[in-house]
Length: 463
Image (cartoon, rainbow, N blue to C red; front, side, top):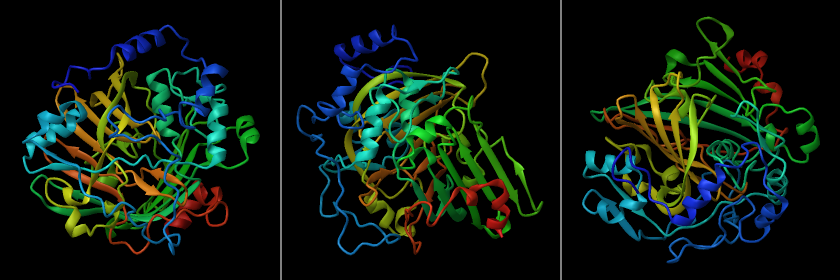
């Protein structure tokens, strides 16, 4: 990969020709039936290359990991199925040059800033999986889904990856937004912030609930006839005590032309629910005490119309993956000064889509350039590098993809979050370390329904 901020990663001549040919294709075009047929042969059902890499360090995809641990029950900590494995490489500032092409600019910068930071690389497991009905919907989406007229939304897609054979950067970004993580989630969480001088504090804690109407099973016709929000969720704060009872409610959409995005807050001191359109873009994220930006939450959140997105290529990169060992660690042992304890963070070699975002003329955002790394198997945004207006590499962003074979899915709920490469402050967000209940995924509508995630209901939920 590049060694300077303004250089782009090296890609093969064949990939370069393919990318050049894409520029002539209509932005709104779905793929042909012949191309979509690759999803049943050389590509996985979600669009990744089924074959491994040349030297075998990335194996072929064989269906993902769907084996539930004996005796495991919903809400219990999921065990690490690869706990017995040992690292195949350990990379730090001392030997980073040897692995340069497979490290992001943000990771290399962190290694230079902290010589004691390292990444332990383990054998690669292509564990991403989804139910058969998600695969079938993805196959249908390949020839039906289109980018919306505004250039930032998707139409005629449902219940699967919208663009499994993407042609543009925005299609890859929309795939990441609509990546499969189940139909619902409900879990306790903590958010820890570590200052540049190493002081750890609990920034916020509470209960998170999510629904994905886009992924309601057997609802394709009704959803396409009347699209609703693809994602609905609320965060009810329980700590710190000064903000206990506050609620943030999100109704996310991938096509604001048809379904407007909705954001509300319930503030205990005001005792009322109010709209909160500022929970977007580069507004400092109050959940993380302003360490990150709202549009960095969950990889990306809210409108993404201030940047232009271009595919740089597909690369083999070291990324956090199968992070169950991280979720099982004790907070005191994991959330340490400067960075998460490398002993508890698993890295693997995976192929990722690299998408570069550049601030559009006339638009304002604190980040003028961004580079996203999206896992090809599960379409999760696993890392991102963010540059500010002065051209400084400002934020390094991680998620910690977590294996949930019971769904089955690799989910990106747990986030190392943001490391401020200028101040050294970082956050560890949406984690359930040391909490009694881990990431349960209830069936809908038995334990969760849309009425519970409405503006009218959140004041009651806060109380």
